[in-house]
Length: 300
Image 1 (tube, rainbow, N blue to C red):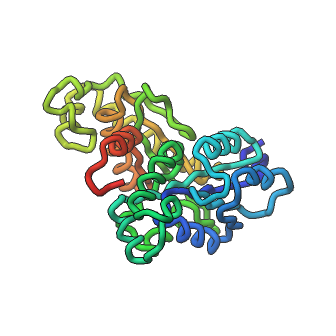
Image 2 (image 1 turned 180 degrees about the vertical axis):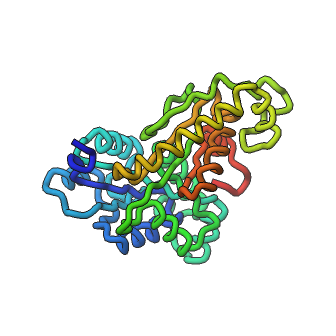
């Protein structure tokens, strides 16, 4: 029996810091035919799947304004829905730089829900820290800092639209094996056999998006053939996945630290698939973690 035959509820959970665009995303999903429920108490979410299917997908907007919100409860909810064979769950995290969130609050003159008697900066900092564990669990991380509402709606439509002719959205992620394989990955490839730039002092603080790092990895005699075979395999499988009715495919590349080899390979494959006309999103989990741990001044 296929996933389409046993799955009764398709749920898209939308979260992220206040001001990052959650309302815009929720409205876009509603326009695409989703049943939208905003700020439903977490304790009531399981009741949605107790009964019969609504016949269309559900979009849930959740953030720190929820009456019984806390990060632990939301993670437990995500894990519970993921394990439920009746549910197909996607988690969207809308992210935004701290200085842009401050600018948006200044424009609207709204008070931040987590600091109604303080400055928006205090509330934004508290909320970003609160949501950090959820950000790591997200299936789709959408950076809205430089996006207009129109841009965000287009991005949501690209990933979650319901066209009459189905498409296949591809997500390519890099990660560190020390932190485990990301949740929801369909295909995993191990890059730890490749030459490691970490042992070159001049390259250690760079990552796989830097050309010098790519050139160093490419000195490995196995690298070129590996890229050719991986590209050919994925390009061969994508049409088959589409024919099976799959809407999303997540491909993961792992290495020891998730900074050099996996990032470089993920970037190169993403470019190859984009050239072939496939819609591709990239995510580098450990680079995101590092950015959160050591944020630049004025960013969230």
